[in-house]
Length: 329
Image (cartoon, rainbow, N blue to C red):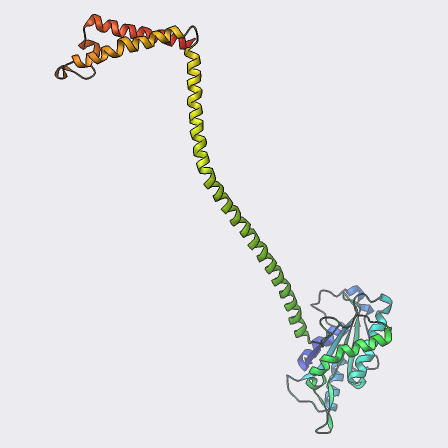
């Protein structure tokens, strides 16, 4: 809702140019130059240039002459989301009154309202002057003015003032402010931690999903291996049955073929020739042939009586020819 920044002398010039929009090149891309003319300064009673006022106010009190001394503090109060447009000006005016009363009207550098960015907001800048009770005078001390205690109670006090003015809770306190205000660096760190927490949640969910997928894959692999173990014997049995079926089918077809009327006489003639003539005479021929007289690749009929050999082979070949003709039919 509101955040605070501390500024050294060297940093003030950049902030002044941002407040009054006098800088030629402003890096903030959210600025709508067509609305810049709508910006205004609530601290109209402070007529000096911002830099001159800071220098004068620091000279009126005790201020250490060191580069690291924060000579100015600024609060940025942004209109709460959901607040009606016709109540924006009341919020900004109430914030200004709350801040000048809290840090002293005599210390206010400027109070520019920016209407040319995404949300209307107030830049309240002041010199952090506090009483030095030990020495009995006043000094510039951002550390004492914006103490840890101040950061803890700031938003609670602002919320109380807004509730009194608006008559309702307008959403000053949130996760970033209810436990005390934080400096810009702390807010950035808080936002970064929130983002990292969300990322870690997404990573954790993704890991769980990945583990689930891995478990499913392992289960499927185990199931596949189990099925392969079971299928192995079944496949062997199936192949065996298939071979038996092929044999049985071939035998059945063969028996049906040779039993046909036009084939059966030729088949019986062939078997008779084989059984009664060819194989008995072949055995006798083997016994007849003298091992010393045998020559490789010599027709067996050359070792047998010509008439007998011709008769044996002629009858066998005639039977085969008849059977072949039957097959051709």
